[in-house]
Image (cartoon, rainbow, N blue to C red; front, side):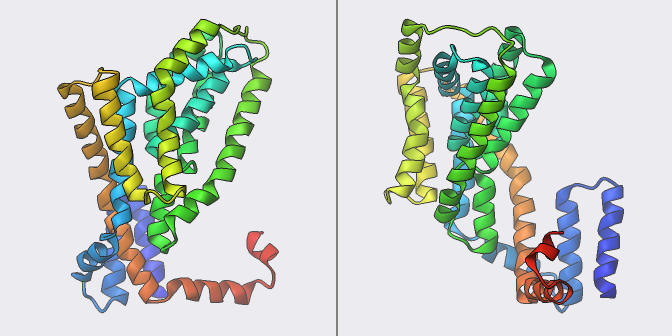
Length: 315
């Protein structure tokens, strides 16, 4: 108990010193292995490698790379153009288009950050130009960007599956309903608050042109999600297919991706992964020790003794 309080105090001090997450996890893992792991600090590396040596983790860099390829190429812009053409005559249509674009893009990249950067770069100035307030534009895009947390193939869901040894495909399936509900609620709010903004009108030629240009981008989420639940691909194979599909479309169909852009996309993805994976490895190592020491079971037992009903735990 004293050791646990010492660790909590040490982490609190590090938070006050504004240390990053990797330092916090490293200190927590090192202290835990030193106190509860018989002082075998070398097991941090061994346990981290054993925990991270899973095929499903390969899907994370591949989904991020696929999203970055779309963002830096033409697919993201054409997908957004299609959503704008579809929602043009609806009150708040542009804001609804922003929400729908975020949902569709999240279904490719699996990342809220990549989704926000890709869609926000196009839709933020468009929302301001259409008469939306700066606060609404920022709020709508930031809120819709968080759909990447739950829209399959969500990277947080993949990480949760790895940490808890839960089927990633089952987690993706469980995320579809909440993702659809959140998207509908955000679109409904955009509809309600956008009545004061002038609406557009149906333009058949614009809709046909947007559909013709955006059909390849629109097919990408269908390929990823459909491939997983039809049994054609695993989550990792689906991510690899997404990268190949994005490369083929950008290089040979839209032809807006050159070597310099491709090099920049790979570099951007590598830098992002360089900040993500050390944190992930340290967290996985700590997770192994906590599971070995049966900490989750002890916490459950402690809560069960203190509370008699599930309502008490929630309160």
